[in-house]
Image 1: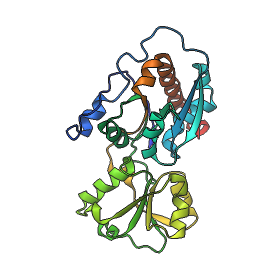
Image 2: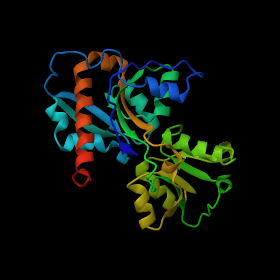
Image 3: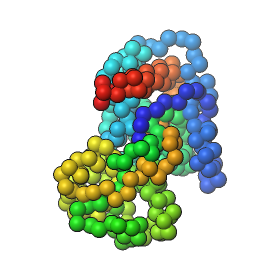
Image 4: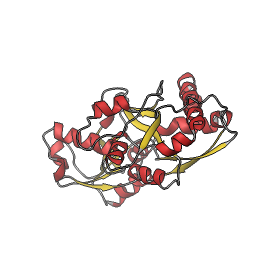
Length: 274
């Protein structure tokens, strides 16, 4: 995944259960009506707790923090690690974080379940050239074809989150019933440890953990999931509750602008961003 930010502010409407397609939801996903339209200046140093998972898709937020883009736009942002992506909607509703980075499936399911979350900026998009993120098979576990996953235990960084959905689709596309695979939740930060311990046969993870797994001879890349998706499909959104976004329109606008600056910084100077 690579950082990204949306270019415009459009409305996001909660999906009626069962009948919304992913395409329609992606088309509707962005800032709530009227957000960022206020002409008043952003209050100095608005405090925001930003919930993220341990993936390079959140580079933009770390760059914005490190390079002072948040501060420049009047935001005091604290980066808060969330172990599993599926826990982000609950953290938003509990106000332990004000902005979080759910994947599209997690956000859609939260809203279908009765929550009211809105997207305030894009966070990252798919990058088919990424040959490192995907399913890592434990050393000694033979995975040569899709059928080899049947009966295996696979760790995922959030049930029904983006990478879990991608892998299930990959299995279906290759004629494998994903219900014959045992899925358990494993945070990115623990992927190497659970693989090493033998608690799972494989894990779905990303950088920098995938490189460490290979370097430490813990496992090998069995399925490079990133290459399975078209380019520039939203993989993570920056989202908040609608109530918080409506109450802080200037902060929403400032956050969007700070992330846009961070993405531009990374595009201009990848070495400095790294």
